[in-house]
Image (cartoon, rainbow, N blue to C red; front, side, top):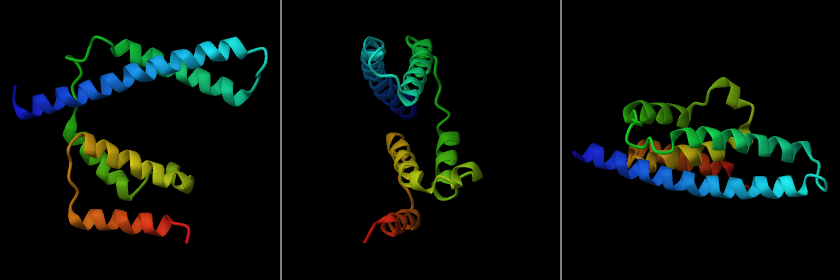
Length: 134
């Protein structure tokens, strides 16, 4: 094993663990939803449950394959940094989601132990300051 292999195994292990907890939580939510179906009828809840079921089926298809999954780290890092400062056109309309997008991009970079240049860090800090309600 080299350091990249060890780092990938560590990241995969974290993601796998988070996914296992997520599946557990989603299973409980689905059970509760099915139990309360007669009481609560909401398109939002139904859409959420259907989305969660699709996510669970995708996640289950990868169980037991952790050693076969390869992280294209350089491509991921490049994509994340590119979208940290310029979102694709379709996301520009949802300006209120921008903080969450920045959070998840930074979180992803952190999982891969990426350190941003000082200039980029300052841009992010200025963006967050601009979003604060004074």
